Image (cartoon, rainbow, N blue to C red):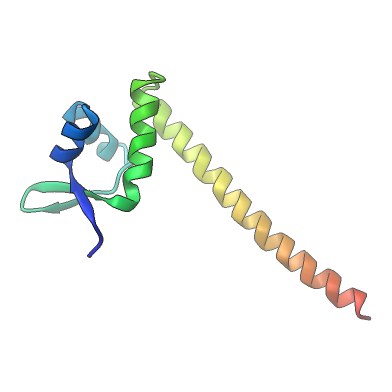
Length: 100
């Protein structure tokens, strides 16, 4: 089982409102695990949680804005990954024709 931290601990450590955490979950921005009515996020999701927290509290970006930014960044990462794959294929094709 991966390491995880409870919602209550996050609220205390990051000094945020519990409703903010719940809204992140409602917007689908955080994946939570529920055990004995206690919500947890994995340590792997902490960087995303911290980013959302900084954007919301420091930059005053609202939840719909966080969702849009998150979706756009995810699309950029997907495009980067697809571009790398295409470059590998192009390189393989180039090498094939250079050897002819």
